[in-house]
Image 1 (cartoon, rainbow, N blue to C red):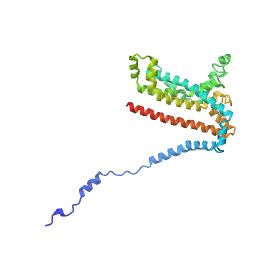
Image 2: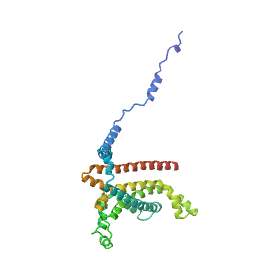
Image 3: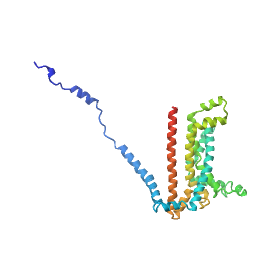
Image 4: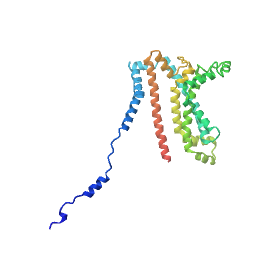
Length: 297
C-alpha cells in the first residue's frame, strides 16, 4: 500500500505564517527629498554662489593683481587697525565675560535675569543703533560731549569710539559660552578645594579655569571673529576716513564704491577665509567639548 508519507505535503500553514510575519512595504516618502532639495537650493543661492563669486572676482585678473591689492597702503593700514581693535577688545571682553559668568552661575541675586538680558542686548540691537547710541553719548552734542571737549578727548570719529563700538557688539559671546559650562559643572569641585585650604585665586586658576577652558576658548574665537568683521557700529562712529579710521570691512565698502572691485573682492577673500578658519576651530572645539562631556558621563 502507498503510505501518505510518500507524497509531498503542502505547506499551506508555513506559507501563511511567513506572509503574516512580513511587514507591508511602505511607499517611500518624497517629503525628505523635497526638503533636502529646498535646503540645498537655498544655501546655493544665499551662500555658495555669493562666496564663489567673491573668489572669482578676486582672482579674475590673476594672482599678481590679487597680491598687489594686498600691499596697498590703505589696505595695510586697515588691516593693522582691525588687528589692534581685536587685540584690545578681546581681552576686555574676556575679563568681563569671565566675571559676569562667575557672578551669574555661582550666585542667585535680585536682578539676575535683568543682568542676563543686558548681556544679550548686542544680539537684539542693530549694530547701527549701537553706533548711534555711542554718538549720542560721546559725540560733540552728546551727554558727555562737553566734558570730553574740555579734556581734549575725542571719541567719536576717532579710535576710542571704534574700540567702544567693537567691544559692545562682541560683548556677550564669552559670557554666554562660559555660563552653561559653569552651571553644568556645579560648585562641588570648588567647594572641595576650599575645604582643603585653597584660596579664591588658587581655586580659579587650578580648578575653575581648567574646567571651562574649552568653553572660554570657544567664546574667544567667536569674539575675535565678530571684532574683526564688525561693520555697522564702526561705520557710524568712525567716519570711515581712509588710513585713519577705516577697518577692513569699511575698506571693502569704500573700495567697491570707488569702482576698485578687484581690491574690494581681494579683501573680501581674506575676511571669508577668516570666517572659514573660525568655523573650523569652532567645529574642533565642539568635538572636544562633546568628547569631554561624554567622558564625564
